[in-house]
Amino acid sequence: MHRDHPVFVRAIKDKRKVKLVFLSDAGGNKAEKLYSPMLYSPPIAGDETGDESDCYYFWDFESGSGKYVLGFPSNKIVSMELTEQTFDPAEFITSGGD
Image 1 (tube, rainbow, N blue to C red):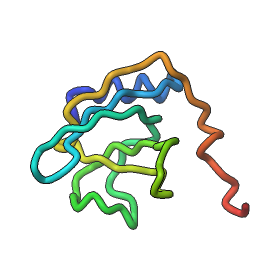
Image 2 (cartoon, one colour):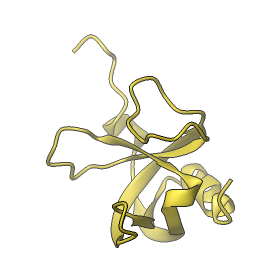
Image 3 (tube, rainbow, N blue to C red):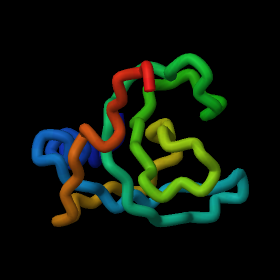
């Protein structure tokens, strides 16, 4: 579990986006982006994190690749910061039939 886990939980509860700073590649380069928190769980089937530890899952509203759900194991997360930007979970939950 990441040291900023309470931020993640609060963001879900308050429906607020987080500013995530994460390691973006094997070279240790950092990236920063706004995401909507979804869940903390064991790896989801089909997840490409390459790690078997529990992951933090986020929704990327601005994904250009069509992959909107992103999983990050704790060791890839540098920090999470609560923002004032809100989100509506209905924006990324579908009925599955559409």
